[in-house]
Image (tube, rainbow, N blue to C red; front, side, top):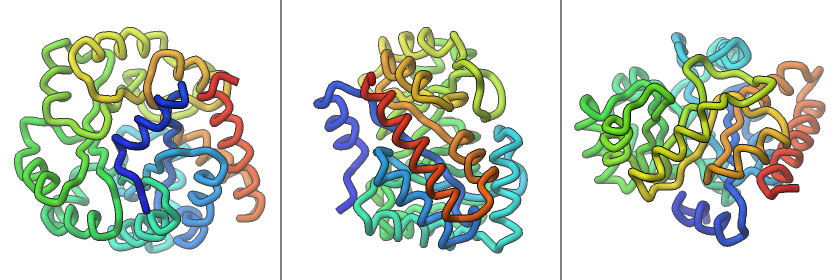
Length: 266
């Protein structure tokens, strides 16, 4: 049985650590391959999975995720493939959320998407380009279907803006560590601790940091001040570099184990 996000964060907190959150687009490198890779992540220490909804105009994604999304789209990935992937991941007991730009959800149908995701066992949705002011129908739909809605704040966000975003967020608050696109970096932005500190003064929600984490050492550093550590591009890059699916699974397992040790302070 898949656990609500609040329970996942509470369990991690009880263990004295941060939650590890891993991202992978549905349909990359294939529909079945994505499920196998996500299962490998979970078996190796990832607590929450972000299943990416492939989109033709991923403005905030860096080159690795753009390449992965292109592969998924050329392979026929659709919103229904995303929902099926969530269902198959949830069957294993993993807590899954969808990461999606707003346009695909709106085109699919806001109520239809929320209902079908809930039926698939999904726990929520991260919508990086949706603002609270434009989220009325989405707030209604997610409330109706018991889905967490996860919004983003950034280093440029004022305290007033953070409070506004947090007021309509549930599950966890996504703190983007830098102003820029996704991508593994040699170091996580120094703005991240300050952003998390400001957010903590304004909300009791768990706060997870994403954009840039790629190593166990970086995960350990972020875990020292955040409730969750989000890793996406680093997983995608390992898969892009692998010669076949078996090698990709092995690479994902190795990275997930390294990151899981990091969030545990080891």
